[in-house]
Image (cartoon, rainbow, N blue to C red; front, side, top):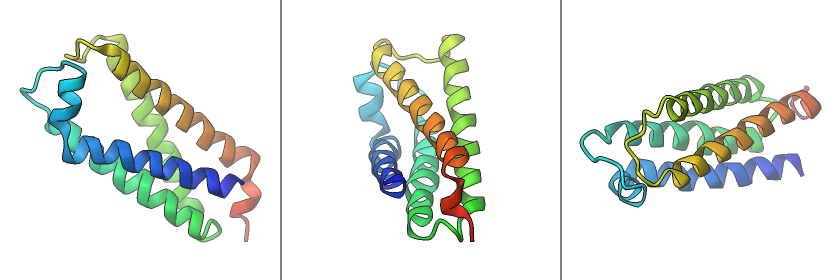
Length: 128
């Protein structure tokens, strides 16, 4: 059950990473954000795709071999989420439709808390 939930998060991350990496202008359009410097969206998309999508699939495939990777994924997810929260708090987004930004933040909070939960409560799936 827990491992399958990691696949679901991985697929969700694939979708977000795909949008940010391949179609950052689309995200800027739906949030009504300025398009002057959206290169950071591609960078975040690559990070989400590589770390959360590919990384969580590797953890799913072989959790005992990938405990350290899961720690890195969890730590990075928490740091990115904190960064999003700070950026929202300090109004650093140029987006006019902040409801989509807020959904992204709430999704990131959920994923980060869930990964921490798995790390603490289901540590046994990582034991050799």
